[in-house]
View 1 (cartoon, rainbow, N blue to C red):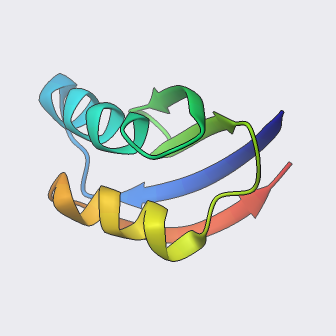
View 2: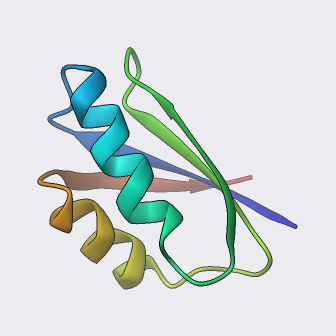
View 3: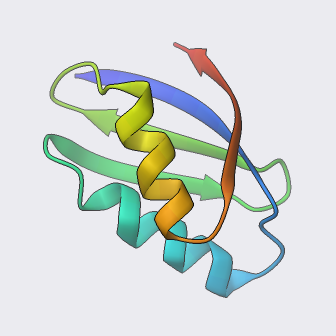
Length: 72
């Protein structure tokens, strides 16, 4: 399993968390998505390394923007 942490800008409420979780969860290979509203961090557990642009597109579809990426 691969764990990646992304920073998402613009999330302010539980609706934001649900929207980002739903869009990122729909990506192929994603096993789990955890969103920390306070820090803006989204931790994605997947079967393999996800392409940054795919995650960015999913977050954009939810109405938000990736601020950066940290790999763990």
